[in-house]
Image (tube, rainbow over all chains, first blue to last red; front, side, top):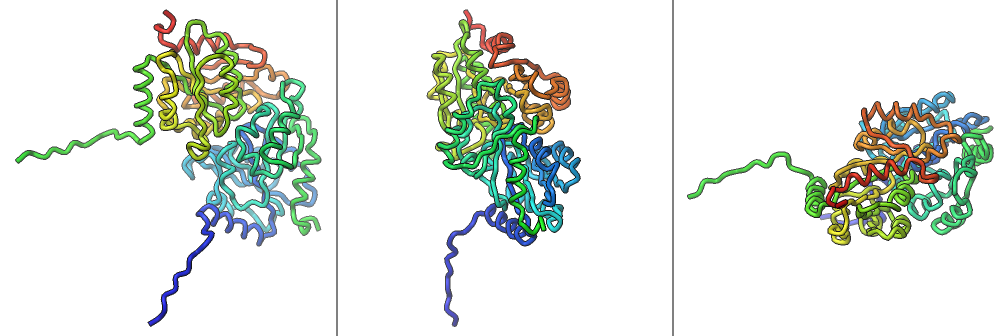
Length: 225
Length: 225
């Protein structure tokens, strides 16, 4: 007779966490750093990437585009002659309002991981659910635009809290709105004290260089040898 | 012995539809017309309502505010001295990114239905899931702002298709953006041919009167006797 041993598995991960960890392992093995970029619809994720990724020096960047439907953003970014892979959450995943780890996993075979140093995942435009699903990323960054108002950190605290870096975009419109940058930063500080912030205008290019440097510096040094 | 008869229930509704129908019956019984107002975060739903509901003549209007967290918008609208009820999807419903019929049902006891003619439900800011959940409304309207870009109808087709009226807000910013109104309307026409449109600026007040009339005209004539 053999003794029966029951091992209690502690810290069991939910399915999304398990798959996110598998994605992360694949990215790490390939030496690719991954940024999960989130925002409300129309905050300017694609426009900002168009500007920032137009000059990436020796860092090889790829983009994974998440949209409910269509490939409008992927088409725009593919003009930059970088690898762009599109995930549609509508036909393939039932119209989900966010990317999850399994969707990203399904796209990994299409991403040339050995040929890039940095992968930017452009999530579905939404300030709620994307924050709840890790996808295997190293960094979670978000974009908020001045036209959305100063109250957004207080109304969508999980999103603003889950990101270590917040880009305030569309600053070219500041003179034409009632937006108070001071109030926005105070609200952000309430939900995410010490969050790193950048100010950009994807339209005029203001602030893009600084954000680009911050983004490209994520790539492993090997990518710039 | 009695004969057994089996009745096959056809057209079985899912739980959300069942509860939405119950809500609708309650609203109808009280003679209240209901608009489900949807948009991306920061498109200007609350600002537009602040302007429009400042003068409602003899139409008695109430607002049901849906937010993930907080009562910032409800607090703003309560300045108008109209009944405002807040639903938070976070503590009560697990951080949902949309209102569903059951959340609205849970709020109905707090809404003075006998004292209003028109109820505006301000949904959670999101262009995906709110379109998938009827809540018992008579009308589904949405707001899109010029700073979100012309491509939004193509990227979020279910939302734009599920609404019979689309307000294009923040038109005061048109001179300061590259937004093409013609392209936006062409994209809207592709996903929702013949959709009714309004142009507004909650900031300058342009177009508010026309939209206010359209909104108040929904109320049953009894409310204006």
